[in-house]
Length: 345
Image 1 (tube, rainbow, N blue to C red):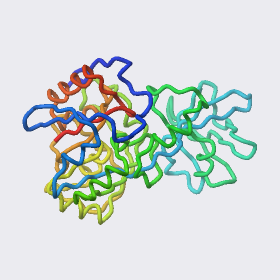
Image 2 (cartoon, rainbow, N blue to C red; image 1 turned 180 degrees about the horizontal axis):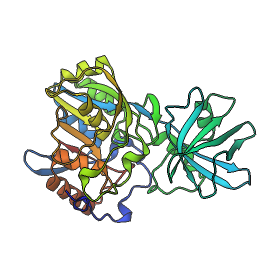
Image 3 (tube, helix red, strand yellow; image 1 turned 90 degrees about the vertical axis):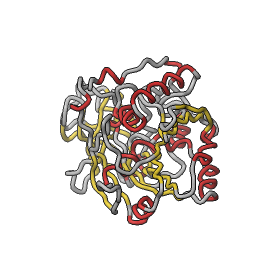
């Protein structure tokens, strides 16, 4: 299939630049794949669409403050986006990163963050990727907390070192985030509030956490001509014994987001049963994929020609998802990370 078949036009005004004050007041477009009809609600009504025996699967990965700004030896400013911790770094804090501007960077170049913290470029991995080894007296997590910013996608515009930095560190995160490791957010979970989670418990709806550390590449538009030619970057996942058992007991599995979906579908066998597992997944879901265990999907509105949009079309059906997107645009829904959501069942 041609990638061009998964394009759509979106007015720039539809791209949400900030989250709503109340997480659970986002709009929710409900796509009924059985009747072919769409309905319009708000996310705080989400529990009303669930029934006894449903299991809601969430991704509890926590977004790290992966954007850093430092200075070269010349004093020039340089921006760093952490992508993933290097697997062959030994005991050092080495990360694969994007650098901007990178034109004059060389192996051995130093990047200064504070009198006692610096990074050294140790390898060039590609035209865009570099490996940087960080040296700081404090634990690296403390260093990121002090100097890092939320890794917002480029379509969310912010002033460098602006007043929104602390706010975004809080809101570019789910309320149930627990395991640090993502450099992009599992955005379908943004809509959950403590009140909605409590209502699920009151209704007897079980929640099963899984972990997938989201990489930056997940959200980028594809560059291939034929969708079958795309290859996903591997991302680390974990699913524990308790969550596997809860999911196996479900009469209906409701995945919160494409990341939770990919964990479930990676682990499920041909009968839809899951076992505890951890490792790396590069599962790529696009139309014609046969879902083994996910039976309902909560997801945001995604960029055209992205793997996320392809997964959504695979689950809901290309024509019905295209129709839902057209309705959402016409009715002023907010798109992308800080935007509204859709529930496909």
